[in-house]
Image 1 (cartoon, rainbow, N blue to C red):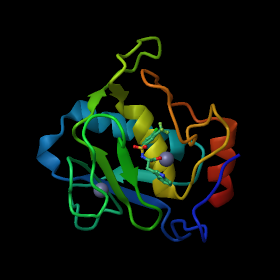
Image 2 (tube, rainbow, N blue to C red):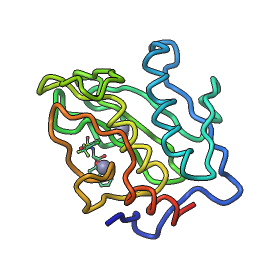
Image 3 (cartoon, rainbow, N blue to C red):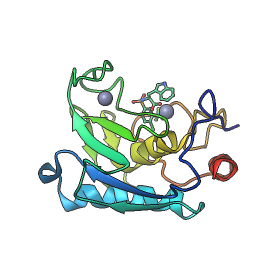
Image 4 (cartoon, helix red, strand yellow):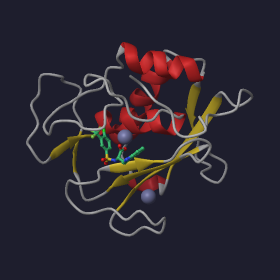
Length: 169
Ligand code: TQI
Ligand code: ZN
Ligand code: ZN
């Protein structure tokens, strides 16, 4: 079953159109940016929320960046595997990914990826759930389940994820 963070933080009802920016903007390919756009779409399809990219990271609601090791927020990354990414509950909008991971991009669900490779979209869909206020779920098939088997791609929201987000928004 789905869960929320303590106190059930969420984006306020007058803030359902959210913007996101990549920091630093010039270092990411359009292919990578498209993966995030697709991941955001999966959540906007089942809610009233919209997600729009912006170049102005000073005003963006959600800030996405790749960092390695200690990057100044007290939650250092740890090199290959271990922690892959972290996102903070609303209205923080901080979404950091571990630049040391072997990130892969594939749209092909049948492609098996090597053991140390991490499917970027799978992690993005999970972390966006956290950015929106979802905690972890006890349903193993759900996006918000706290572990994923290595070499797995999991990007489709389950009924549990949808019920969770629809009870928040
Ligand atoms: N990062 C953890 C996560 O996002 C960070 C974390 C630990 C956390 N405990 C938390 C976040 C409690 C919110 C609340 O869950 S991770 C997966 C999964 C991670 C793990 O790098 O371990 C995914 C990031 F589910 F596959 F294990 C993304 Cl998809
Ligand atoms: Zn961080
Ligand atoms: Zn998580």
